[in-house]
Image (tube, rainbow, N blue to C red):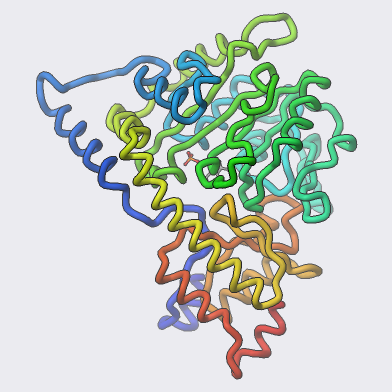
Amino acid sequence: KQALLKRNPEAKIISLGVGDTTQPLVPHVAERLAQSALALGTTKGYSGYGPEQGELLLREKIAHKLYHNCIRPHEIFINDGAKSEVGRLQVLFGRDVTIAVQDPSYPVYVDTSVIMGQTRSYDTKLHQYSGITYMLSTPENGFFPQLQEVPRTDLIYFCSPNNPTGTVATRKQLTQLVSFAKKNRSIIIFDSAYAPYIRDPNLPRSIYEIPGANEVAIEVGSFSKMAGFTGVRLGWSIVPDDLLYDDGTPVRTDWHRIHSTFFNNASNIAQQGGIAILDEMGLQQIEQVIDYYLENTRIIKEALEDLGISTYGGSSAPYIWAAFPGRKSWDVFEEILENKQIITTPGSGFGPGGEGFVRFSGLARREEVVEAIERLQPTKSRTEQLIQLT
Ligand code: PLP
């Protein structure tokens, strides 16, 4: 981007790259945040440290509104977002565990595992860390790994809707994953940060919709993409009572100890914001923002398909996974940036299985999406560039 701006300072670059949100907080939530900040300036409204696992009302609302009471409030731990929680979860399991990740996937699972010391060498030929099982997820296998080919690992990171592919695992697939974990005595760390983008009632929004998952899975959720809280910071993790170590002791007890040792919980203002999100009014308002992003995604996907580019995901997630078979994803990224001044995300950054793809994000502003689509249209002078692109 810097190099392009140096050569062409007039370039108006549009970012369909990073996964940050762009729309303002909805009024119901912004008002509650302001009120709770003001209340802290009064004797009556002041509060300091809150409960270790987070405000009970917030946990009750998460259990009720998002998990339809199949999870209980004491199994929920409030946090400052899913990313830091994934890092803390590494501390729960330590450096001696083996892990499997979807390939491609959100890089934080692998990066925190490398920092923890679960792997020590990087294979420059395969572009992957040794000792980590990469579960290849491609259009050919419906973005769901061939579990019969996956060796046993202690932990399995699984993200649905997936970042970057934007695809969602079906109920049948998650049922297979749960029985695979049960058979192997593995723990699934299920990241549902994009669950609110699922509109199809037949698709599972949580791993706990699968019978028996509470014996094998931890779930990490977030208000970031659900309600534009990427800057406010608020999320949660769930460690069910039924998740036990081999010796029968509950994982939840350890997690409570680690969580409260490392962390004094999310800001009380953010937690009030989370309570407002889960009010009827909050839920109605955030739904409209999610619809806006999903419409962006639909527009981008349609335009790419019209250009003859195969795309995946996008209907239940704010991401589109665009295929450029036989090409390096960094080359495609550079070409789109150079020729169209549009930033995308090269797929190889999400794991070796991301090579040959780029990710487009619908979390942008509508006017940027519309302009990006216009730029992608073939014009006489740009036809050659486009043929190259496809
Ligand atoms: N999980 C996934 C799959 C993500 O894509 C992201 C952010 O992009 C996160 C978690 C981080 O969420 P948070 O903002 O709650 O830390």
